Each structure stands twice: as C-alpha cells, then as structure tokens.
Image (tube, rainbow, N blue to C red; front, top):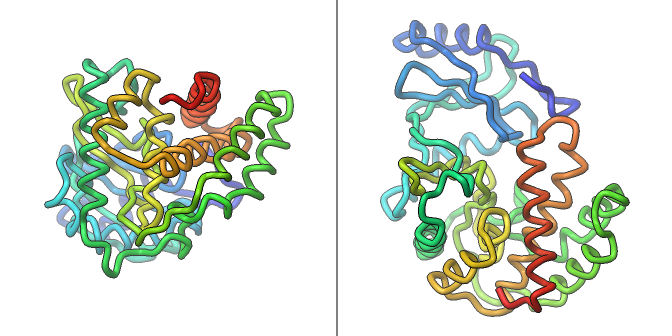
Length: 303
C-alpha cells in the first residue's frame, strides 16, 4: 500500500484476514483483494464477490466509520443513486487501533468523463442526486465544522488555501488563482439552515456502469452545512457545457454558485501540494478543477 500520510497506520491483507477470523469468522475464508483507489483516508479490500472491507488509515478519518453506519441507511431510501450499505463494524484488534467497516460491494468504475456515454445525462443525474440529498431532513446530522471542514463558511479555508497557493508557486498561475479565490470570498455566506452534503464529490467518489452514473461512494466527509460544497462537482468533474446542464437541473442562486466554484478551487489547491508525490490520480482531478475554474472565469463567470 502506497504511504500517503507520514503518520498513517500499516494495513495489509494479513491484518484484514486476522481481524476477520477473530471477529467475523463466517467471512474469514473468503478471498481478500486490495483495491487500488485514489481515496486517501481509508484502505479498501474486496471481500469475496459481494463485500468490501474499509479501514481508516489515518487518525482524522476514524470518526467516519460510526458516522456512515449511523446515517447511510437513513439516507439511502431517499436517493436516486446507489450509496454504500454498511453490513458490520469491526473493533480495534491485532495492533490496529480503530473501528473499521464491512460494506456491500458496489459494482462500477470511477465515473471519469471518458467513461460516461452521455455527459449531459450524467450532469442531470448528479444534479438530481444533490437535490435529493439536500431535501432530506438534516435534524441531528453531523454539523459542518465538527470533525469535518466540509460545508463550513468558505472564509474559514482562507489560510490553508493561501498556504497551498504559496506552496504551488511556479506550478500554477499564482495571480489568476489568487484573483479567483478572492472573488469567491466576496460571495455572500449561506443565509439558510444547513443541508445534507456528501462533501467530496469528484470522479473518485462516483461510479459508472454501462456508461451511466450508477453510485456515489465514500461519505466520510458528509455533513450538514452550506450547499455550495457539493456544487463544486460542477468543476471537479463537469465541462463548461455540462455545467450549464447541471445548473439548470439544480437551481442555485448566484452566491451559492460562486461559493461552489470557490470550493472547487480551494479543494484543488490544497490537494495538489499534499499529494503531488503519492497520488497522481487525485492530483489529476485537482488540476482539472483548478483549470476549469480559471477557464470559467475567463468566460466571465457565465457557467
């Protein structure tokens, strides 16, 4: 397993097998296969044909386990795309320090643009998913800013975003990204109550089957907060043309659209220097988001 964090724990097939044997013996004889993923918070192993084992690899991801077990079964019936279904929760053992999860396996490939047969349909499907998620009663849900920065006011990301811009000097158009970031900060804050957010919508967390969007995975960043956070998928995945389709199917005000663009930019800028030597797939998505934001603004913010 490629190390992406300096303080992550060591996880391997042998460890997973030992913990399964001790805690879920009925599944211990199933084949275990490590899954290569652009995800950074968890190690993922396929268990047999129908299940996946997911283990936090870094301390900041540990709260995700209970959060997903509590909330995903409640969200799933209201959503138009498949999401992960938790089956069991493991406990610390064999030197592994945290709770971990077993999920139903979801078939599909990462929903990159080249795997989506009809990109306009994909944009519409994404908008319907985001809208359905936002309509779910958020009472009791995990609040943005508590164990999770997704969905917080955009200004709270100013310091790490500017630090990332400094770290990327020479690798990005510094003047352009600063101007784009400062423009996003000028957008009015979300005035309403928080809504449900996935929190990390990009191609690495979307699955496609037969050329069509089929599932949304990895809800570790889920929160109740500013809806602009999920609007960032318009720049982390979509094109200029399909952003128009997405926006038409998910009516949002100008301020939320501008903050969503800011979220995409901030996310991309922070990802790049942190993962530049360990996660080329995620960095590719981050560069795409930055480029799309800058291209969008050159068109006068039309999209």
